[in-house]
Image 1 (tube, rainbow, N blue to C red):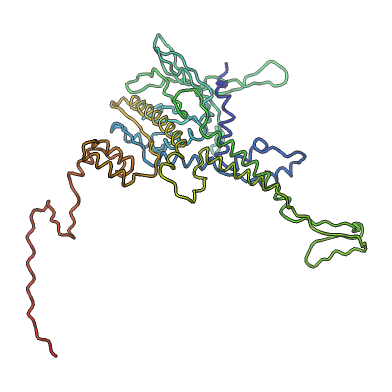
Image 2: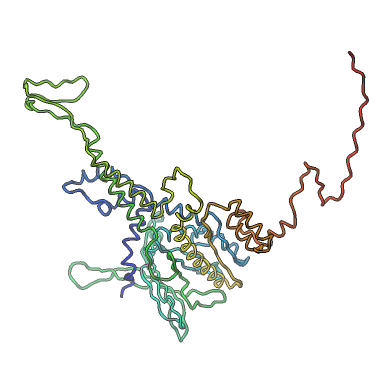
Length: 492
């Protein structure tokens, strides 16, 4: 089996990944695909089709939905717990030098948009170099294998498609783009599992048949055995999949695929509507009874049409039917459907006030999707962070927890009073009250119970305006009374 062979699940979902990618990228990417997303009308030639495609309007619902939902997760900074020795590493956590928070944004948007992404922990070849995390898009993870390793199902092979740039050996100002495959493999060597990496590249080899004198073959260009602190090799592949609801290799349907399909249907309806408007918006002149061999008709304010034929007629054709109206209604229906499927940022606000419970119920579907994605990404980032600690030879635990509170309503005064009464009556603990106040965003991020207790013991700040003495400076003497001025007679 050649290294370029793809996993059956990869081949099954590749088309939908490309479709989601194009729709999220926007109008230019969709229109560049031509007839893939907008078929030709019957009987049209290339010039007519170009005009048909150009007039179509693309509605950027998918992109705005991804950015809006990702913003709901990232409106609070991730809660990261890690040893102090990893502080510098977290500031350049990815291969491109991004921080952990910046990398989490990319991972969330990939899972929202396509439904899948992969994370690989690696390190430069130099000894003692810090590890980093490389992000691989779904389209670049072409194959994988899962087997029993020490009684547990684990990855034993992952094939990653890459494109690297190298300087041209002849021209120093030119770079050559080289296609290669990175194969992560777990081998059993002398009853011990060892993680190895192979880089595969292609070359030409001569053939004995007529015609072409060369054919392409893939070969192992480079092999390495990554080692962690102390020169030890890994007994697992430090690669993790991130899906909508899991971190397993199995491919799941993208959360926005239904929305993407409706978005493309809306695009096709727009093309038909704009095509109809193009041919019906302006009146079309018509004549009857004119000798076309003798008379050349033109249109203008200073031009009159004259004919010797008493039966001659002239007029304008104007569109008066309701055909285009049905297309407009169809577009409006599809926009509402996209709002139901997740594009809440595109939905018009109701002119009537909604109760907090109604808003919460209306948004429960989107919050459920976001909650699952936030949990999966949190679990994946926690795993790669712990792998980085192992790679550096440090000790201590680590975790990454993304925001899962998407309720923007906050906490109302009645709920606040009920919480306070519950604590005062002994029916509610202080910890539970602080938990609810944090969810209502009345406390700062990462505010702990101890922080709140210390703040209460410290008391409110002293205000010199109302004359409250500052206890830190000791008792203050009362100010001396001002001397009374003598009364003077007033001249009449």
